[in-house]
Image 1 (spheres, rainbow, N blue to C red):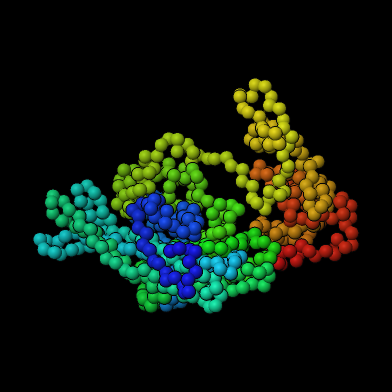
Image 2: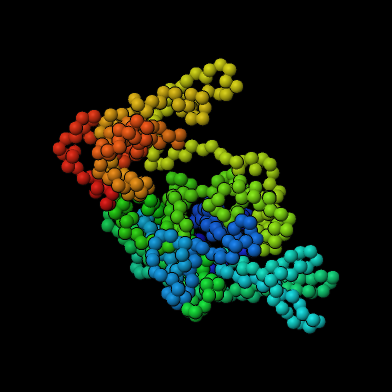
Length: 537
């Protein structure tokens, strides 16, 4: 679909079956050339979306017999409502680690009046793979757990088919009223014969129940700058089967699994709910996200795409460039999983290959991984400087001439900071004498400050110190370029002992308010409750 077409009515949804026999594959060149701008944006976050889609699909050691692969589908599961209400306590939250019958995303965006919104709902549809053995000379079939055909092992196991529903609608239509679209998928039955010696000895039967679902879109104007809106995307399982007495396994066969949503379009610019701009701060707290949470996606600094995930992420999530492919254990470490996969016995590998085509693809990739790729998995040095902390980073140090005999390493360019891992990287830093600007005041050791930990992103224990006064003990520069203040809480009876041991509390410069230097705070400063207002907001 062309994301730039406004038309006179909403474009009908397109439901696609995206089937691959291994990890996500690139689309053909002719398909890529035909993508709209929103398609291209969605493609850029495909790797992250697939990592969420297949998180827990099949966990190491990728065998059917593994206990942790007997209870599957843990995130973004939307079961039929009648079953959910009979079995699940309704506890709405942003975590999608529990079943429900609906999922809701709300976010904020700026857009011109002629903007067109694009929504892609993605999920997995459960598929039962049953291995059957031929009985007698007739057409009789018997379901079996395992069948060995000429040394090839075949196992009965549940698979999944990726599904995508694309929705495109002009903003003007959403402002006139909510729009609801079907988002389900049809059932199916496929049979693959298993032959030996020229005859059919068995077959694999793959069956799917239809998935019935709908997605409702709604937009509303917000108070504030012109062209600011809230978008709501709600996806529901509308199936009336199975019965409330059915098992979870049966309910999953009618469910949307690993449900997540991509948001984009022609014209909208989305706002972070984690670090919203000033105009959006109050509105962001009223966004209601249920079992999913939207974050900015794509390259840092862009705001054209949002990814609403049942697994909590930060803005602009990325897959490490060193990662050679999916392992379905997105929260684990590639190097450890790859090495442990290599240590599986031949019999374990045989079972894993028979369990699922994606498991076989993982084994093939690990066993054929070049040594240089393994070396990259061991670790990488990066210097990420979050956008909100860049303004607090120390300025570049003056150029330092490279000393003779340093193994041919080039010196830093003029004005360039020496990397922390190089000799001399910490020269000129002194926590006891360094200072950092806070609200127009150069704060250094000995200054008194009021503690104002941020409501979001702060350590939970820091929240007990809201509004307390403290003495700065040092200014510390981190390897990522950020700055932290080491402080001693003034009314802490153990402050002197902690200082003797060098144990302090640490806060960012934007989490403190300077008081009256090293002396006593003024009466106005002592009465200030700005920290409390900041946290409550």
